[in-house]
Length: 332
Image (cartoon, rainbow, N blue to C red; front, top):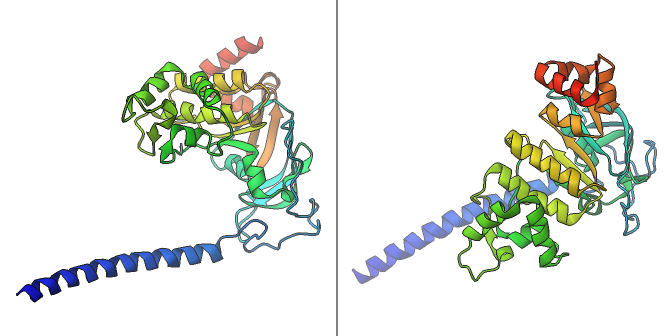
């Protein structure tokens, strides 16, 4: 009987090991599929890779610009067209505009207008079929994706918090002193978020920045976005991209978020895809996209003064907003 019980235990362990092996085998298969199916830097799946400048852009190379790049944050799209797949039409079509250093530009448009495609093109997450995208005069086609993406600050709509300390989430490369991180937290979150972070510590002896956080952190969406905004303030990137980052926040928290950006990131060029048109009134310029094309680009006052056009029509749909805009800009 003793041996029978031993055999039963052995068979149980074999079953567990077999199940684990099967799961691991599936994981290996997925990794193999991903590594062969997903294009890596410089290899566009299904697209011809231009390395000789024949598509009108700077030839692709792995030589990055100077360490100080980007110094100013000037963003230029010159006749840019881009597509997700070879079988699909271009999501962006001959897009051209220039954002000067430090300008705050609101990007608006109906669903499917190409707003997120523009962001993905700037991050080189989709294939550019024509034109040039330049940052401080450098065509990003000739910049490695690692260098490019480290040079930009991105706040997506879905907040991403990694399992780790507050310090690791806000300063993953360890480039800043604790005092700088705490200052950024104070600017963006204020005492409320600091108190909440203090409340989830396992012990009062643990420093605030060593507090372990993760995807299930007990913060509201607005508080979480302000926490992540601390990272952007800390990074002091020359270019900040907000891809509807504040769309899920209440109006007060959203206004606070954009106020922080305007006050503390004055020298940072900002491209913000916005859902609430009221905020666009306080931006330097408004970029209106429609079916992958730029249909308007100017100051909100100039666009509204025209008395027509896509931006005027969108604002006009809200009589209260239109009245506020007329009062703000002194329009008849």
